[in-house]
Length: 472
Image (cartoon, rainbow, N blue to C red; front, side):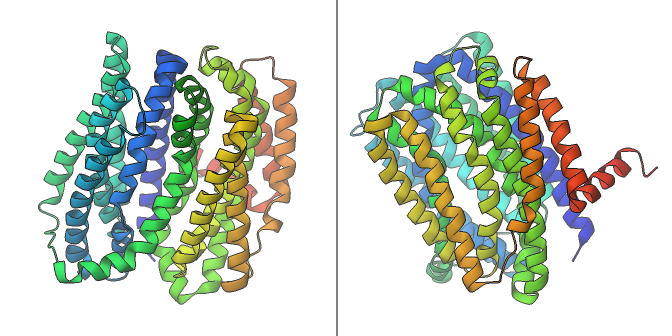
């Protein structure tokens, strides 16, 4: 186990992801404020639509490449070549499907025009994602992190130009198109001397079959995150879509946290899943503890400060979304807790079980969204998301306890829950102050409380202090 390489990858991924997500968050808020509920509804509809179709360009072969390449690097040229070949073919088919189905969907002319350009953009990005998977397989995650960060910077620069120029919502789509094309060219130049991908058509069918559990799970997982917006775009007005999206996407910005903390560990977890289940369990339980602390604290803070946050971030233009945020805020906590449990199934050769759970959750989400919409409107979509996520968590927990090992997660939570309640009380007392001040003070209270109550977090705190002070 190369701990230095793991640390390098984790550090690079962590720093770049935090910076990129921070830039994307600020940019998303600026775009939302700039467009307003109606135009932002069109914007969200177009991106949810193309985002749904492009998911079918990935049949799991990229993730299979990571798994097999981590075990045996000699297979990478063949896996990488087949991945690029299949991904390109599927992207073309997905784009054609986008163009065909946007007419019976009944979208207005603005949304259709956005779909034309955003569809091309996401095709380029889909190919880029497979290249990032290659870097993950060879444990050069620091390189993929750099390119992903550069992508965010380019999108931000182009978007700022659009906003300053006062251009319309369709112009924003070109910021993604130009950025993804530039990154594709840079990735090609970087890789042409590192690896020679080769297609292996006779074995392509077998690779698709082996990768399909990963691909279907990925489709279900990402459909789950954006399907609510897609359903609403077909059933309610674009203004209501904009209001729901303003709150929902604020939480989705933070959903990268679980994958950030586990991406660098995937190759190691795959190895431990085959060789040492006891150590595998120990690593997962520590990851669960940290993720649950981040998720529960974050959800609690958003719930308490939902009003001040929405009013400040969106300049009072989306105050109708405050109750939505109070509901969907709990998605962060549930996602953080269930993600590490799902990784147990993936890294112990039980990916199909994870896929089935995600598929059932997607079905539950769809049924609940349609059923609750006549009764609760867009609030029904928010409740549907939370109920489906609760189902995912308990389904994973049941399968792991029954088929893998007796994971101990409940003992990881008391310190987190007590600290979160103290933090929430602090935030509530300071609710009349600026939300940044309230959140900062409440966050300090949480960190102090959990360091006092839990020895693992105390060690983490001491480690951070030593790093900051140079070991003094």
